[in-house]
Length: 384
Image 1: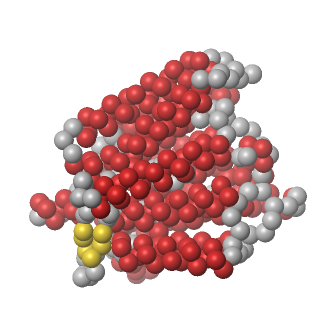
Image 2: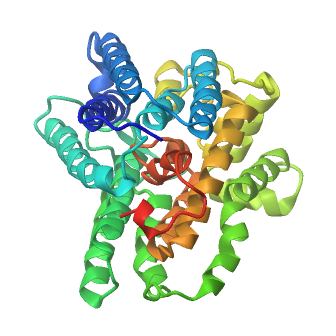
């Protein structure tokens, strides 16, 4: 039987807040260019780890299944981070170790408010010239793209997309003409500012997708979709690998690659250079901004599944796939179709952006991490 303590949720919330501060302000914004920003980031992450360790000690008692999950998955994520230096894996490690005995939707309410405050802080800091507003252009286009204080215009659009999805899950949003018009106005505004395509397209599609949802019911046929839902992560991973491998060999995959700004061919170049390492490896990435400043070649891993494979390694990918399989089984049994829809849209997002791997952009990773401590046949109570 698991022992609960009154301090555990507070300790985890503090650790979670420190990591979110690091992710949004120090990793995703131009605050990262400040002197000592890197040192401050390491301090935040070390403090978060210590807080989670204290929580683990205070929780004390663990059943065998819980202990094995924590030991095996935690070790894989920790070793992967130490070898690869990929902070998105570290964030998931903190969440995975700390979220035991905490309901994801309880955390989601706090997450939404904190995230909104930090995004607003970065945008206002940019507007008041405290930090820079990175302005760029897509290759072959003269349209200016504004980051509003973030390290790339895509970051702002992706964060806003995640906020829209999160609000819909929290409020159990139903589609209406007013809601649709508001979302499309937000999407249009983001497109005019950032010229982003992926996140903006998903924002436009979201209210249309909501139309396909019905009220939760006790129809047992809903469980028949479980296997398909669980296979999403490996299927998208396999599709991404094929797009990468044949990005210059088969016309269909070449067309996809061109439509996505050569993301897959860029990944192929790094795949040929680094290959695969079971527990991940350090990969030297060069952003478009850095490449233009130094007149060097870009080195990008913008596809979430390929970044996990090449930088974090196959074992970390298996962990992600396993956690998502458990979570989606639970979500289907709970008949939370809205959450399943949002997760599916995040999976689509992952074929274009590596932010899918970041729990502070893709909040469905909270549910995935929590699923390791719950029965795969859990009821709706697991989420509410």
